[in-house]
Amino acid sequence: MTNTREQKTILVLGGTGKTGRRVVERLQASGAPVRVGSRSAAPPFDWSDRETWAPVLQDVSAVYVSYYPDLAVPGAPETVGAFTELAVASGASRLVLLSGRGEEEAEACEKLVQASGAEWTILRSSWFSQNFSEDYLLEPILGGEVVLPVGDVPEPFVDADDIADVAVAALTEDGHAGRLYELTGPRLLTFAEAVAEISSAAGRPIRFVQVSPEDYAHALAAENVPPEVAGLLTYLFTTVLDGRNAYLADGVQRALGRPPRDFTDYARTTAATGIWTPQHN
Image 1 (cartoon, helix red, strand yellow):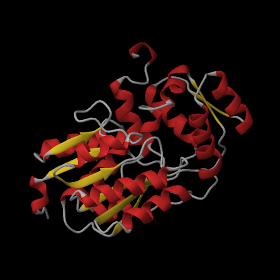
Image 2 (cartoon, rainbow, N blue to C red; image 1 turned 90 degrees about the vertical axis):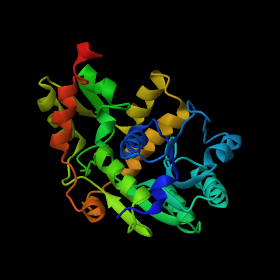
Image 3 (cartoon, rainbow, N blue to C red; image 1 turned 180 degrees about the horizontal axis):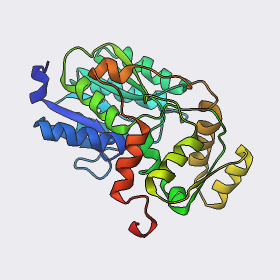
Image 4 (cartoon, helix red, strand yellow; image 1 turned 90 degrees about the horizontal axis):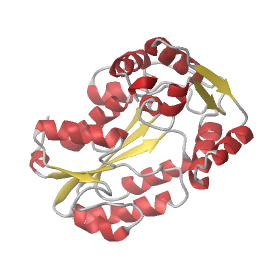
C-alpha cells in the first residue's frame, strides 16, 4: 500500500554506494522524486562536512540513512545523531537506517534514530554478498587468492538487491514504521565456502587462505591501506565475525513476503557479467 509520501522528495544518502545506488534506481523507476546524497551530487553531501547537510534536506520527507564508511567507526553515533536531529527539524518524517548486525556502535545509532520522533525503520544487515564483486574483495578474487583473518565461522550473506527492495518498501509504503528488520540470506556459509561458490560460478580456481589478524594487519599496511580503514576491516573480521551473527533471520520475508536471494544465485548472476574474469577488468 503506497501513501501520499510518494510525491515528495526522498533523500538517499550513499546514493552511489552498493545499496544506495540500487535504492535510487528503484525509486527513479517508480517515478518517485529522488535526491542523491553523495559528494559528487549537486548539491553535494559529505558526512564529514556538516555545512552540506541542510541543503540536501530541503523539501525532503524521507531519508535513507547509509553511513560511510561504517557505523562501527568511532564517532558514528554522534554524527548520525546530529544528522537525524537536523533531518527531523528540516521536515523529514520518515527515516530508514542501514545498520549492521552485531555492532555495538551500530545499535547506538539505531537507538538515536528510534528516538528521533520520526517514523523509523531499521535494516540490520549481515555481510553483503556484493563485497566480493563491488568492493575490496574484488581484487583478490581476480587475483585468484582471497586472504582473510577469518576461519570456519559461518555468515548468512545478504544480497544488496534484497536490502534495496526492503529499503524502498520502507521509504514508500505504509506498514514498515517502527519495524526492525534483520536482513540475512537464506543459509549460512563460511568465507571459504563462499569463495568456492564464486570459483565454481566463475569457472576458474580461486583459493581461500586464512591468516592471523596480525599478518592481515601487516599486509594491509604494506599495501598502504589507511590505518583507520585497516582498523575497521580488522575489527569486522575478528570481532563481528566471531560467531555472534551465525544464525538466520526472517527480515526479508517479513518485509517483502518472499524469501531472500541465495548466494548461489548471486554468484551465477555476477559471474555472467564477466566482472570476475581477469581480462574483463
